[in-house]
Amino acid sequence: RLTGRWSGLPVATLWLVIFAGTWWGLMLPVAPRLTGEPWPGWFGWLLWIQTVWAWVLLAAVLIWVRQGWRRQAMAWPGDLDSLVRASRPWPGLEPTVAAVGLILIPLGLWHAFWTGPDAVAIVRLTTWDMVAGALALSAFIGWHWSRTIGELALSLWTVSLAALGGTTALQLAGPGEALDMLPAVQTGVLVGLTAAAFLWYWLAGVWRQQLREGRAWTVTGRLVPLADRVGFLSAALALLVGAKLALWPRLRYGSADDSLGRLALVSLTYVLLIVVCLYAARRMRKRTMLYLAGLTGVTWCFFLWMRL
Image 1: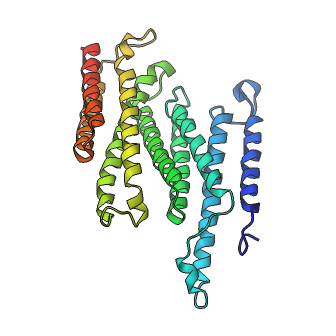
Image 2: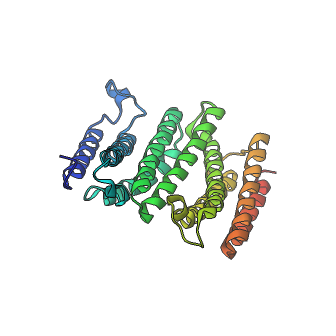
Image 3: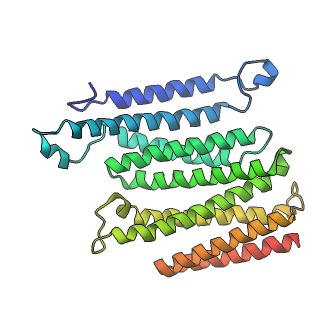
């Protein structure tokens, strides 16, 4: 049984389902359009594994949370002291959630930059997969606090915003060659990462109001230093994407990429990233954010110089 005395059966079942889904993904046809297999050509084995891992993890965490709700409902009236006891996860569930969340981050970033004829479907599904993984990790820390899983949850939300930006950019750009679509995708991801950096620094300021004499007593209060860290990582990653975008016309396979809409949108994103870095530097009193703001300004100038 899953209630009563703790058992490792739930986590073992979870890994069995994950391995079964992975094995099925490795058996998918590599080129179904050439072989005539009735399978979507864009739904490759790596995307299948990402989807299975994310949604299976969400289902497992929701089952565990539902058990916690049921335990609280059954506490009345003879076991009220159980309401103040910490909800213990299944044996092995916490490292499992951390491991799956850690693996989903690079998978999501890999698919967020996807280009080609089926890129919209791939990046859109990646957005939902990252949301599912982020919801799973967020639900876990809501019932059982873990600093590692909290940081991974914020990172997955960041990747979901980056994938959302890539999806929006692909839909606005329309169909085209894979190489020609890369600047549009990079612009969308740049916007998503900048929005994530702004979101985490803003939420860190809001959540800081919940601290009592500098000590956290809520889940969001404990997330304050993690939001600052993930905000910095989001801003740094946005700077790297912006640097690659700035160098695009000089690359061997690059193009002019000097449309008015691209110049306006990317310039506005650079300005927002600079403002976010300056705000974080003022609030956190760290020179690192000032350096990051300066590098962003230099990258912005280089971006315009390459195209004007």
